Image (cartoon, rainbow, N blue to C red; front, side):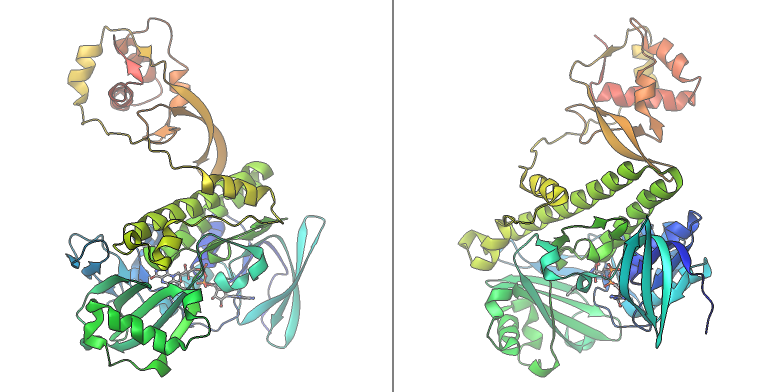
Length: 493
Ligand SMILES: Cc1cc2nc3c(=O)[nH]c(=O)nc-3n(C[C@H](O)[C@H](O)[C@H](O)COP(=O)(O)OP(=O)(O)OC[C@H]3O[C@@H](n4cnc5c(N)ncnc54)[C@H](O)[C@@H]3O)c2cc1C
């Protein structure tokens, strides 16, 4: 039997993109990390169409090369029949470049990369019980026929969407189901196709292995008590973009799964912390599930590093909950608006109306987290649209301003915001102003609040440049002044 340490800083349950991303970040930050995965890899996994932002994340993790596999599909154009009466063609150049991968293979390679950095992997193995005692989790892991006990200060639950029970979830959209099958790739053009129909929508895409996937999304209520295959075939039959496969599909080769979006009601429980789809799931409409799962795993890794290294428990947890709520609320707003933009929502079809006008249901067992989430979810969207000023040439402006006194806008206010400095979460003073889209802590990696603290009565722009140039490059000082002046945060008359 392999020998493993029995004590970790962090033990991760689940070896999908969220679990492995967290593992790589935490190993890079110097922690001891173990991971339990129940399946032997490569395992089958849905969610192969990855959004463009995934490339930066893979590069950041040192895994950029894994996306260069020549079996993967890049630069696929799209044909979308959603808002308008006719389908719209979007060329590969107009579309930001996503990538279609083999998730089984990619997840395995990512796990291997983490192993090469020092990750201890139990596979195939399953978490069977956990007990929290005196700040440490004692975990029983079934590893083959053997039950092994390990101890960990923090546990990351990265078991994916199937990892939570129904009563632990707060649904953030109406119940939905996905039904799909594959046809040989040559039956459809090399295009992603998306089409709204009266009772849902269809998505088609070439996938690795010379196949084309046809997937339908509909309301769970619409298929209750009905034959799934008949429903799916009827949906395909209504969609003009899928005419080529209508009548060619076989109802007995269908796959299905629930795709209702939710957020976990207690995602951080005594250092048992949910990440990825165990924390929140997204509507597949955006094809950003993997990207968001990885991004949130990286944010959680920094939060836990702040907890373990700097003992900042409440900053770590508040930052984690803030980022989780922000991601889930932003996504819910984006999807509701996208459903509303469909030509069917105007005719008030139930599928579309429910999704464009979804309200959270009140829950008897609410807690601080769900209350905070519900409040943000129901907050009306700020319609504060900020117009970006045109770029201003720095040196002529500085010449013009040199002898004028700097005045601060009376509309400038401050707030405390989370900021990640190096690998630590901190609370910093941020600038708020109607000309800024969001509160701003840093500009070009320079913290603004301490700079504004160096302003004194009657100081001129020329003198301020000299003062700031003691701690910054002179060009950077000028650029920051130009930015603040162009947003009317600094005034000159
Ligand atoms: C129908 C559908 C279509 C989708 N399409 C897209 C898409 O086009 N693009 C996109 O980006 N995303 C898509 N997604 C979402 C995407 O699949 C997920 O966002 C992503 O897989 C989440 O990663 P994760 O690491 O959180 O979970 P997962 O990838 O689900 O990984 C969880 C891992 O935990 C393991 N595990 C579970 N329980 C245990 C246990 N008890 N012990 C040990 N191990 C355990 C599992 O075996 C698995 O390997 C889609 C999802 C669905 C349902």
